[in-house]
Length: 354
Image 1 (cartoon, rainbow, N blue to C red):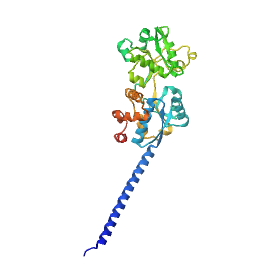
Image 2: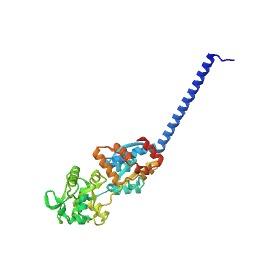
Image 3: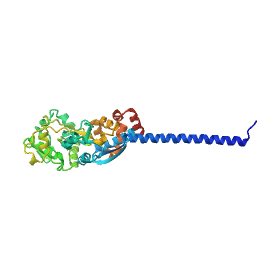
């Protein structure tokens, strides 16, 4: 018995529609499951506010954290403007932002110590960047030409090698511009080491541009230069500046905190000292410590090698790159470093997003 053409046509249409409806339902179910997984992932990590510092290394770090936490862990990250004192005060008093990735702890030494002791804040990473610090520096060609200049004490005996630009009979030591915290420290150390008696004059470079220009001019001309700077910075990275060993130990926090960093009228008798050890921490609030989960493990494990950070700061300076562009460049160029901070699954997600 043969079926009619109309019956076959109707049957085929109904079968086709049934398959289409089933396929649509499967797609809808898959999409819904994906949304549930995504929402669950975000809920597990949650929303995070991170300080985006107003200096290059801190800006870079904040954007790297944002990319890895969002793409690798499913967090919802908001970057908020940050600078040392306002950010610390806000975290300590208001519990926001959640994360301070590159907090220079010496600037808030006592109040941070108290906040940690009382449980309001937590240091989850005591050294997110290696090889950093403040102090005195000389160019690499000076260190190579005069290998006998092993410490600051050696250099202070040779003012003739670092002639002052306006009085070549004196040595010129380049300090910090007026108004900077380090200006007080350098002025007091200048007195503590009796540098004037040894034939030195203290140079105020006038501004950040003046300080940078002083170093750049000397290094590019192959001249000797002796002065203050800090790392990580593009200047130290670009010119491969050599940190000077003071040749004496740190003379204690009382001398430093209650004299060296004070105005001269409050520091009658400064003791010679090595520069205080620079401490940079990643700090989080107590509320985030209770809900951060795997995100906190990431923040604890990520450490930037100092040489690589300096190189990235040179890249940012030479290419006028902001934090977001620099973060992508870092993740692409230094995969061998950052993939050690996370699991292979997280690393794969981040790499797929770049």
